[in-house]
Image (cartoon, rainbow, N blue to C red; front, side):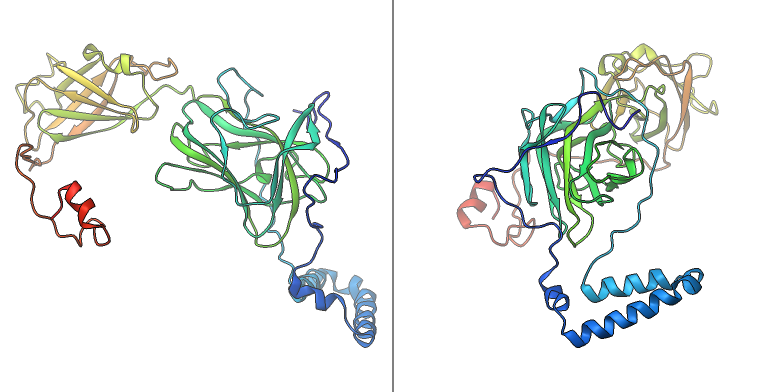
Length: 396
């Protein structure tokens, strides 16, 4: 894959008087301003020390004194060093498909809104990629681009893809995460680490592909995409173009990786992939036998099919309802046929998974018709609720 596409050159148009003017990317933090205006005596002292250092630099290179001097100087000036990158190979896959989730391509796609806390232009028409406007983002002080879509479903998506370039410099650290409905962030990955060429480059468009597997965000439900500055100092501005989740599902055959029982009438199976509800609903694709032959209700010679199944999409599990109760402490084998996942890939058939029933099954009785019970207002976050709202909730 080439870092450029035909007709994809970035073009910069001059800013108009009406456009927002950004501060100089090279501006130092206020604490450093006085350091940049030293007295003449300080200039002579620092200049003499610098000449002396340069004279012995060749002798001290192997001792790492040059890097140490640079680090000390950066600390003196209040400049935060960007951590070194750890480049990874880009995942293989298509550039685009009809099933992609487009986030931004010249403009925010339908269903997306901008909740960012970073200085940005969205869209920035002064810079174009493939003839379309881009997102200009200032990376500073851990600020972030946050794009919200309450119905972001990554099922079948392989990676977040975009084209990226540094406006005035390269090597920026920008971390990518997804946020779920509970506000929990996925583990961040560095956009530069998954950029072709090993990092974001100055004034050069490069392809970036952040795999969802690295974010632990495969086949999940989310509400926002966040691209945040990885440092507290100014890193300059980056441009982002054609931001999308590319459809590239994992076509590995699904496997029932685990089985357990919540009660003696139901076995729950956990699958490694999101499954096809119609396929998992076929009771003829399951058979249960007693592993050690101790339960005559489930003989190995005559496997027993369930009477019903139910698929739970958000956790990729299937509940199998049995015609006869299992034995407490019993061991069972669940054999599966060619049940299919959401992408049409069938499990290897036959396959099996073991289920061990606990010696003391959990029994829970719920009286749904019982009257409400008095609950202390200090419980469940009710301490600051008004009496009217508490009464409406039935809390006394």
